[in-house]
Length: 345
Image 1: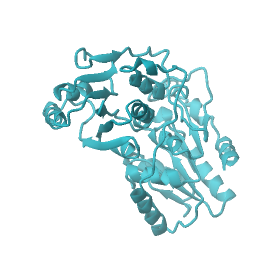
Image 2: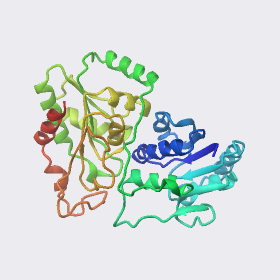
Image 3: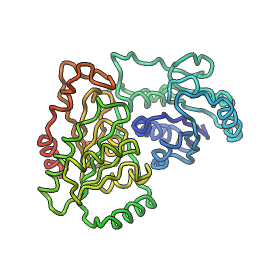
Image 4: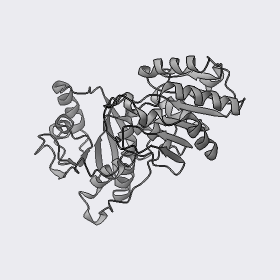
C-alpha cells in the first residue's frame, strides 16, 4: 500500500496509544505514506509521531454529524488516492468520510450500524475482557496481512518526539517566570472524564509543598486544560501561594505541554491524556488511578509507576463515586506518592 489514511480517535490518551499501530504499519509497508485525519485537539499528538507524513486537521465536534463538513472533507481526501483507511473510533460518523472518499479498503472494528462503511472489520472485544488499548489498535495492522498475527499479550510502548519549536517556546515561558532550574515537577490535576478520576486538590497541594521543601531549588508547574484552571488555583491556595508553584493550566498549547512534560524531572498525574504523553516521552512518573482500570489503560513506560488501591468497589468506571466516599483516591496519601517519586529521581 502506497498511501494510508488514519481516522484518529477523539481523546488524547487514545491518540497516544495508537502510535504503535502507526509504527507497525510503517514496518509492514515501509514505503507507504501515512496521513492522519484528526480533530484540532489531538492533532499535536500525531505531529509528534515520526511515522506520520501529514496531519490533516478537521473541526469535527463530539456527538455531531456535521454532514456537509464530512462530505467536503471526503472530496478533498479522495484526490489523495488512498489505498486504505484505518478507522480507529467505533462510531458511525467516523466511518463516513473514508466511505464517501471512495477509499477501497476501510479497516476498523465493528461498531454502530456501519456495515458496508467498514469492509474489513474485527469484532469488538467484550467489555468484561478488554485488552489494553495499545493492543486493541495494534490488532488492526494484522487485518490485511495475517502473517503479522499479533500475540494478544504482546504490546508496544508508544513513542513521541518533542517539537524543537515547542521546546523553544516553553523555555521562553520558563525564563519569563524566572524559572532557570532544571528541577521541574509537573503535576496534572485534571481528568476530562470526571471527578472519580481526580486525586483531591488538597493532596496535590501537600505533595507540591513537600517537593519544594525537600528541594529548595525545585519548581512545581500545574499543567492541564482551561477546564483545569480552577483546580490549579485551588492547589495554589491550599499550598499557601508559594512563588515556586505555577499554574499553567489552560496557558499552554498541547504541543507546548508535550515539550514541558518531556523537559520535566518527574510527572504526577491522574489517569489522563497527559499521563500517556509522559509515558510516551519516557519521563519518570507516578500515575494515580481511582475509578478506572490500570490494566486497560496503563502508562506504558519502564519509568512509570502506577498507584491503585484495588478496592472492592473499583474499577467502577463511573464519572462520580456511586458510594459517595471516593476512598479509591482520598486514601492515596501524598507521602506515598512522594516516596515513589524519590525512588525514581
